[in-house]
Length: 172
Image (cartoon, rainbow, N blue to C red; front, side, top):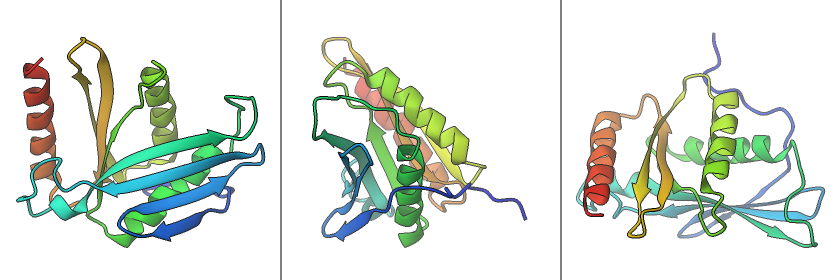
């Protein structure tokens, strides 16, 4: 049987905090603390949708303890993947929505890194729909949704995502 998602072999141990959000915490060997958050976001496509309670905004936040802003660490990607698998194992129809952070103007770098991770581990189990949104200043931000390929709401979610993006960008 072919694996549809390649589970990581080595990764950092993580803690899971279950509250109104699903929060995962891990610390690297370089003392960088990461927080991976899945924030319930039923409003994204409208709270009247049958899948509204399954929508989450996904974010990865790093807090550096020292002066270094980035240290290459090959265990971060597999740790995020292990967290993703844990989150999706809670409910097969969960859907993640993310916007690449643009606070430092590196949103396209973040997108490339996340795409690399996704492509390295995904073997067809997950579907990622991508686009970009434009702010009022004309800046573009990568956005995406990720769901299991066999999500029963897949077609409806894809249509809602397309409508959201086109409606958002048409307003600018």
